[in-house]
Image (cartoon, rainbow, N blue to C red):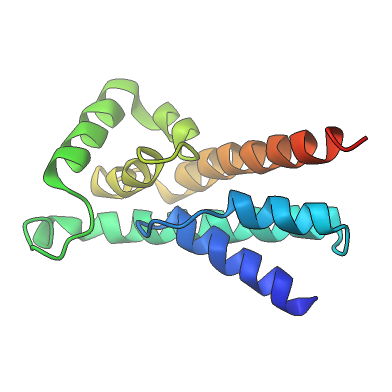
Length: 144
């Protein structure tokens, strides 16, 4: 049981960073197994995913000195697109932090542009929580 919870945390954490991982499939699989507490799965997925986004925000605070390095995980085009989107819509664009492909660069850009920690944490937590709650509802609701 512990391995399932740990695996979900690692998948959710990694998926929120710039790594190409998927936590939704892990969560759905664990939900469908009916061996885990739903509220605990959701809590672990949300906390892991928000913490991963905080890593992006933190990296964004110091990204300018690394952005032109060959090993940097975000292409200049993706970073520039995210910056333009963020500058156009401001901190509310963080509501899209759950969206694949653009969400992770948005959280990085929030750090680059100096988004205050408390507002970043609040908006990203809301967005990530909503995504996992809808996913769990859709998964479990279809079974009934």
